[in-house]
Image (cartoon, rainbow, N blue to C red):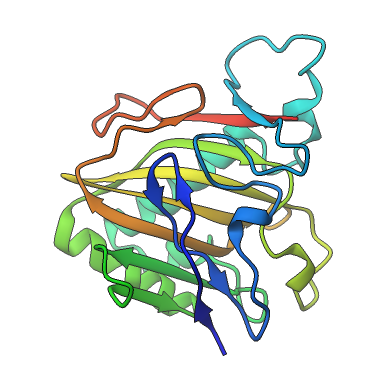
Length: 229
């Protein structure tokens, strides 16, 4: 039975985490964890590094260790395509970015501070419908920042023919008119589809850092980086 567990913070913004079936797992303990713009890695040392900066010898493997299909420029293209399809109301195009069942674990969208002020989508159509409602009530969606880690959430719980496909997790912030949403998503790097996600929609934007800088609600262009291991 799907359940909503405690919400960790992504740089000050609460992020919903999903518990799928009877497995009580928190997104805070997967390889790309939440909090303060840093990953909750087992050694506690991972941090985001700007993909646009020339990597030092110590950090050069960061982006290249990410699976093909989930490197920062590719993740930015994925978000641009998905959010663009949502904004234009192109349901067919948007569904190409959402994993089919049984790979899709679900997507939770929280609005406000109440524990019950959320919407959980368990099918591709329901995920599209949830995002489409946000656009109808709040304006266009646009990616502001994203930080990519080389292990996606709930990898051990993935089922179906794509269960062994490489994955990545991304902490992200998107703009939505005068609102913003911070969250986490898992990406199948082979298909370029989201298979799980959760985000929290708030008014304005909290002062938070991701990819080495503060996120601004009306940033000129998105910044996507890779976490440094």
